Image 1 (cartoon, helix red, strand yellow):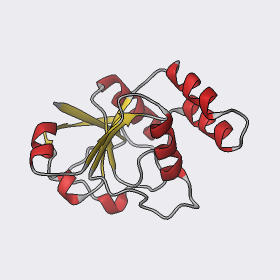
Image 2 (image 1 turned 90 degrees about the vertical axis):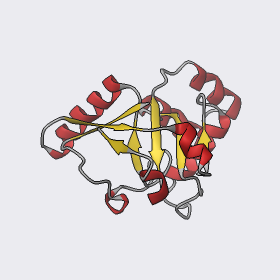
Image 3 (image 1 turned 30 degrees about the vertical axis):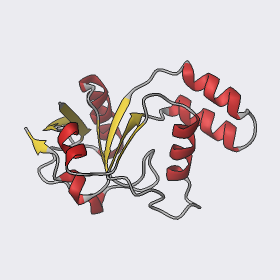
Length: 157
C-alpha cells in the first residue's frame, strides 16, 4: 500500500528524534493512506511553519510487518478504547511513551474529536455519549510508526 506524509518539505530520512510528543498515538512518524488528507496536512503545516506544501510517498507492507513480529495495534473506528488510547498519548501528565506498539493504525482525532475528548475528560459528557458522538464524526486515517524497526518497513517512493 502507498502511504503519504504531508509536510512543508520533502522527507529524505525519517528521524524519530524530531517527532513531537503528545499526539494521538504518541511521539512518532505519522502517515495516511488518504492522499487528500496528506495534502491538507501539508497546507496546514506550511501555514504554521512556512515552506512549500510537499507530499512524500512511502510503500508499506502491513502483512510483512506482521510476519516479522512487529507489535501492531489497529483501531478500525473511533470507539471507547481508541478514545482512551488517544487521551493517554495526549496527556502531558502521563509518562511517555504510554504504549509499546511499533505501529498503530486508526482514525485521526481532529478538532471536533479533540473537543469531545476534552468534554469527556472534564466530565461534561458521559462515556456513552462520547462513543455515540464519535460514531457520527468524519473519520480519517493515520499510520503511526513508533520505532526504528517500524520505520525500516517504509520504502520511500
